Every structure is written in structure tokens, then in C-alpha cells.
Image (cartoon, rainbow, N blue to C red; front, side, top):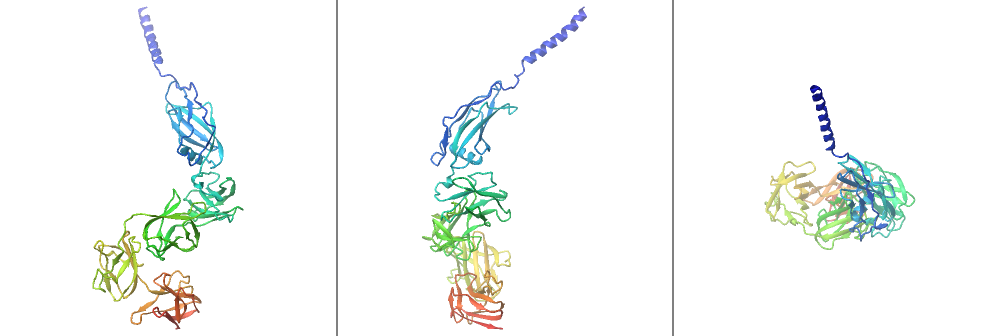
Length: 526
């Protein structure tokens, strides 16, 4: 009997221990009570420029209960278009946001600005790091009108360009417009690579579709480009553009653009540069096919030259994203200025670093210097000299085929033969170029036959004339100085005139001789 009792007592003790452990376990994680939304204090919110910084009506709810476990919440919003976005996540039983934050989320959700839409809010609760989740027992709704600041001061017909439509985000969409009332919306948009392959045009007031399923070529229709849309649904898409300043007020005069920087977040082009009290224009892609002039508040294609009020450093801002109305601003600023000139001392002037006859100048004082100089000896050597800093500037490394080279505390710059040379120095980039130049023949009759590049003539210092024997084809031509149109001759060979009419010639081989001082020329068949 004793043995039996001992055997029986041991299992009983073990069962008591197991029961005790079971009582000490954490309660099973389960939803005891759902969260429940409280109603909004308002039934409608109209967001505008005056209340963007104010609080959106407070979103609150009664807590969910997961047997006392810690709970987190995710609040979502769905607007009339049916697209849902997450407003925020919190461990509190409320969520407070500014109108501006809600407005951006409305844009992401596809809301139409200026159009009231019923927005529905839903809530998801979770406990133990998402092990257990549940939705609130109800949703709440409020009517909200979104606001687009881009359209605030537009009092003419305008439209949205919606890339990837039917997906639509008014904050990321650009406006095109019809400020002159000709029935055509136009304006510039920025389309980054990979944004989408098609777009729609939506009326800015009614949000009705004017045109959709317009194809974008990924090779040519990316970047900053112009779009035109007719009210009849017709659409034109331009090529990518990059903008700059050009003119007598800039360091490059009418020969070279001062490049502008693009801000993708605003769509604006900006240049911080020194300008003289001359003239300038805006142009795209370094050519004249697309150029803007006129006035600060109304830039037009091919408009008159723009004037700089006074020589100074400026922040110049070009706005081409104002619903088809193109404008610019100029704000004086204080930036570092370069010297007005560098002298060119060399073997041809006794290495005189104070010479007034041999200088490259920077009228805008933007560290870019240029001039065309006559070097009257073969095998000449020289350097550039900055009197402000006392620096002698020479060539570093080899000269490239295009005449450019790096500069610094380097060697003398060497020229093989006498002649006119166009010299350019960029002290910021520490580069320079020295290129043979002078009077040239240019035109449709002169190779390459498209008025883009001229053929430099040979200079005779004894007669001060220029000559060249070349073969031409039927067409027109002119004489041009130093690769630019500031000085050019046309009209009649016996009395050439600045900006004169194009000269005509028949195909053949000719010797051209120009006397620029007398403004006469001879053309002799060979």
C-alpha cells in the first residue's frame, strides 16, 4: 500500500504545478471593443490662401480595446475620386493637421481644386506591433474644397496638363493658359524622365477633359518644354528647352549665352550675373528659333530687346509656368565681381603688364573676359595678367584642337603666326581659348552653306586687306567680323554697308578681297 500511495502522489503534484503556470499566462490578445469615430465639428471646409496655416477640424475617436494592450492607429482619407491616402499614424485618439497638409494629401488623392468633394475618413487600429488589427466600427465624412495657389492670380482661361492621367495631382501639374484670348492654351511644363507616356489637358475651371491620351516621346518629350492645346482637342508638344540670357548687357554680348539654372520645384529659370546698362533677350538652346523679348510683364516670341536699368549684379528670374503668360524679374544683388580686364603682356609688347592696347575685358565683371586682338609677329609668346591680384596666368597642359586649354600658374602661351585672334578667359572654370579670327565669308553660298559658320579670310598687314580664294555655289553671302553679327557688311561691293543686304553670287571659284576701312571689296573669278 505504501508503494501505491507514493506513486499516486507524484502525478497529482505535477498537475497542480501545471495549473498554477496556466493561471500566470498573459491574457489572450483579442479585440474587446472597436474604435469609433466622433463626428466632425464642421460639415464643410473650403481651403484658401487665407486659412492654409489654420487647423483642419480635429479628427478624433473612442479608443479600441485589445484586453488592455497598447494600441496604434492609422487614419486614411478617400476623396470623391475614390483614391485613398494615409493621413497619419498615432497612438493618441485624435489627429490634428494644418489645412496645408490636408490640401497636399487631397492633391495626392486626385481632388480637383475649387471643387467641393465628399471626403470619407476611415480608421484602422492595431495592437502588439500589428499582430492584431481591426477597423473602426464607423467612418466619418466632411465636404472639402481643395486650393491651388498656382491659379490664385489667373483671370484668363487656363488648363492643367495631367501627366499619367487619370492619375492627377494638381500640385504636381503645370498650368497652360490663353491670356491673349486666341482660343489656344499654351505654356511650359517640366516632364522628368520616366514620369509617364501620355497626358491629358483639363479645363482649369470646370475640370472637364479637353484632350486626353496624348502621347509623349520618351526621347524628345522630356524636360522643360512647351505644350499648346486648342479648345477643339488639338495638341502640340515642343522639344526640350534650356534657357539663357544673351545680349550687349551680358559678358558674352550677342555671341554667347549666359546659362540659367532650372529649379524643378518651382519651374523657374534663374541666373545670378553682372549686367551692363545694355540690352538682352532670353533664348532657348543657344539659338534664335525660340527667343523672348518685349517687357517684364509680357514676354513675347521675337519681342523687342530688353533693357537693363543700370550696370549691376542681378538675380534674373524667368517665369514660363504662369499659365501661358511669360514674365521675368530683375533683383539687384551683391556678388563677387571680377576685374574689368586682364592685360595680355608678351613678346610683341615687351611683356608690358600695364599695356592698354592688349586687353581682354569683362564688361559684366563676371570672371569671363574676351576680346579680339591683332598679334603682329610670328612665333609670339604671351600670358594673361590680372592687375587686381598680381597673378600671371599661363597655359597648363596642352592646347586642344579647338584652341581651348586650362590656365593657371603655367607656361607661356605660344602662337605660330601673326594675325587676329579671339581670346577668351574664364577665371571661374580656369579655362581659356585663343582662336584665329578676323573677317570671314559666310552664307548659303559659302561652305557649309547654312549661315552657321564662316570661312576666315587671310590678313595682309601691309595693305590692311583681307583675302580668300574659295569655291562657292549659287546663293547669297556676306562679310562678317570675328564670328559675330555685331559687325557685318552687305549691299554693294563698291560701297559696303553695316547690316546691308545679302550679296549674290553664281557658282564658281573666286578670289575675294575686302578692304574694311574703305568698305569695298572685289570678287575675281579664278
